[in-house]
Picture 1 (cartoon, rainbow, N blue to C red):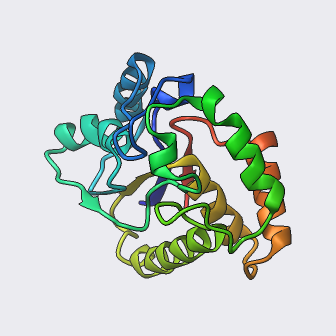
Picture 2 (cartoon, rainbow, N blue to C red; picture 1 turned 60 degrees about the horizontal axis):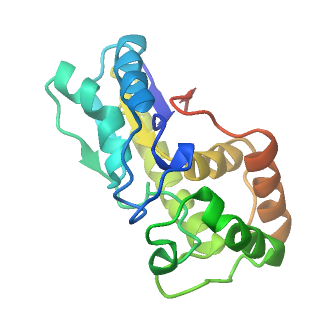
Length: 193
């Protein structure tokens, strides 16, 4: 039995759809099919932990129904929101390209674009907190299966720090960004913790 880490299915934002808020992004039609297929690929599920975002719930929903489970929401699991939510209202990936480039060109892990945005240091802290939680849960799930549904950037940093623990640094931020570009985590990718 195991702890499974799963990235959400394809969302409207992933296919350049306009979004109103980070949390309200829904799955695309293809994403809904991926969520159904994921339900068939995974073994018996005993417990599910999700972020508070709608696309995560929609990805886990077929599994929750199949096993008659309620999901536990973890406040640390949400996606890295380094761009201001107010500024991103009703935008798509193309609209945000220059803002994304400007953020990453800074390579300043303490930089926060606005009061409704996170710094890379904030993400690092959330990932560390959740990683510690997983270490505690590991023993509990030796006989059961735990499914954790989360986001690409959160998962990318979690897996990096799991395999190569390291302090917060500019070098970590640079390698994280490089991994996002050159080795992105695909929708519905599954990893064992």
